[in-house]
Image 1 (cartoon, rainbow, N blue to C red):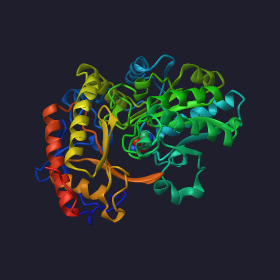
Image 2: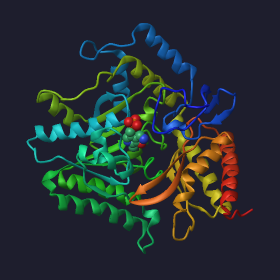
Image 3: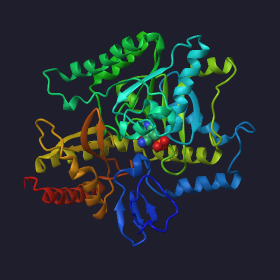
Image 4: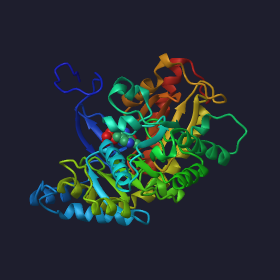
Length: 448
Ligand code: PMP
């Protein structure tokens, strides 16, 4: 259980048990203790763990070939996966570039946008406006668009900070506007920012359609999505959707963009796309953007592992499972069940201030006062404490205390898309037990 003898390091010294095996929505540690993977890792394991059919298909690919460099060979898994992805995309988005993770996908999307602008003779366009708070990755380019000073601050002199607009945290607003008006209000902040920066310098607007770790499953009013797309169109700015977390079915549609009928120019995906079976991501772009670049000599970008046949075979097998088991439909159905169950917890715990999200990308936020949405005292470290209380009880959830734009302790509850109603009952039972313990630790009211 200790990390003292470990040569491996990550963010912090957090002793965790060894993972022995995983199956379906469950993990089992070295002591035989069972955990419900209530956050699919970091919103990754969409089809559940150790699916034997996926493993078999990966093994079959391993027996054929594990690696063929893309400049030397075309491979069936990469061609087939690109075709399957393109077929699931909105009209016009049919060019696919594979990567190995979310940060790579975001970097790729941004570089693709820039090279397209340059090819079009629009050299002056280089600013990628994004939102505060937001999370788009850990590499230097993606840090520039990530709205989270806690992750970016120390590296500030080393990358170009891109302009930010406030994320539409409408649930915190106490004005007299309707939902629709609030959506427009936040969308119009993009127009103001474009004007302030100089429209001829703005290349793209990058956003998570449903917020992930940074905002805890933040969903904007419908009007926001439509107006943002209109503004981008009006100024000739590319609209990039970061669907690293939302893509591949998590929100109950293949892309979250489909909820609003939005067709972005470029989409970045990862996480649930490889679903934990292989490091895999994809950038899907408008046909004409890619053709323009290829006509002009090619896209100056690439990663060694891009489109490797083993990762792509895993991606294909994951997609097969999603389609054969209707997991996107299940995400929508079980998302409704889980959201209703989380919302019902608000009756018992007055300190749950908000429940939000779409499909199985759901979150709740803890507050000290629901009316004013005043946050819990920072020194409580609620986002750590509740996660630990749940972990001890065999439930994994994912949390953050956001420190940019607004403060708040939010908790993502995002089980694999294979989750059943009975398993949701288990999740809620353990979560209730953990919330009771949290309330007891801090003398918070519990309504029986
Ligand atoms: N974009 C979003 C929306 C994400 O949620 C993440 C990961 N949390 C990333 C980008 C970066 O992905 P990765 O950690 O795979 O590089």
